[in-house]
Image 1 (cartoon, rainbow, N blue to C red):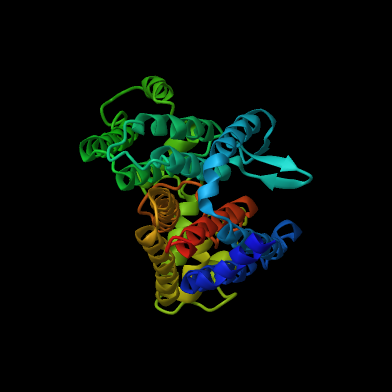
Image 2 (image 1 turned 30 degrees about the horizontal axis):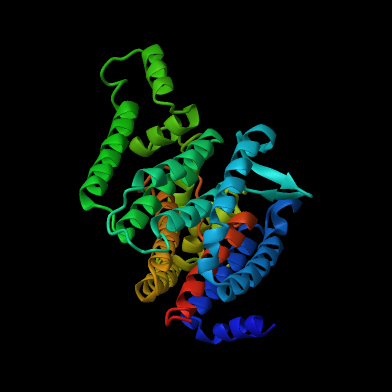
Length: 392
């Protein structure tokens, strides 16, 4: 009981700016999920209420995680990782298929997305692997084990398929290795290899037809590099913006129109025509394209404010890493910050046409129960590191 009360007193040492930023982003999300679902059918009209419930549950977990010593995670991180992998395997066989993908497991009527657990499991296991208790490693002889740890859930997520979530693993692993002290040369080579791989994939989509390769030859090539039809279509729409505007390119085109039509100050709350008239489909407006709704209704000014909020959140996470008392805390914070940054960058970039459309939500703002709870759990870990910054 005395230890519990002592841990509760740690809440006074929290980074209150971080907590205020989190609550503000959650409020923004609930408001614009409400806006995105007001003229839709009963299946989506109450999503904002569900989001509020998930947020409240997540905040309780956030505070509980803050008062829990993050160093105790060494003992459970591997179990958490194994559980996440088991769930990722299970979803491939027993998952609910929605819009052509198996990404959700149903428990007592509640959908759980194992891919969100997988990202956090890799961060926890990776931080444990890269931060042995003896703190005696300046170089990382086990860096290849981390790639294996990340590679297993990444491949399982791609199998669902969920390319957006799979893409998050690479940058967070690289960031964790860099902070842990991995040699810079192999990290640079890996980054360059990734750039070459992306270039080859984009070229594979854009060039074969221009080089006179037959459709049959193109299909064989895409099967060889494991590129599915829907992924190929999205890349083609990205490279050729005018292609199939009424089909595959619809979401991209309508999102860009929504963002652009917002102007400087927006059309006003609940007055976004792209959203209200259904040009942004009801299946994506509250989730992956929630930023398009925000940009249309609040304009450039509101979009910048959202960016400022995310900047504050990421800065708080990096500051916690800087003042962390040990390597475990530093690696943990940087892994979580990188995960959140990747989500924010890719989500916003795809809504304005800078990257191909991938299914990746906006942290604390997009609708999604599992993602909300896991994000708040991760941010609670950052607070746990921060409140123990002075050796407590």
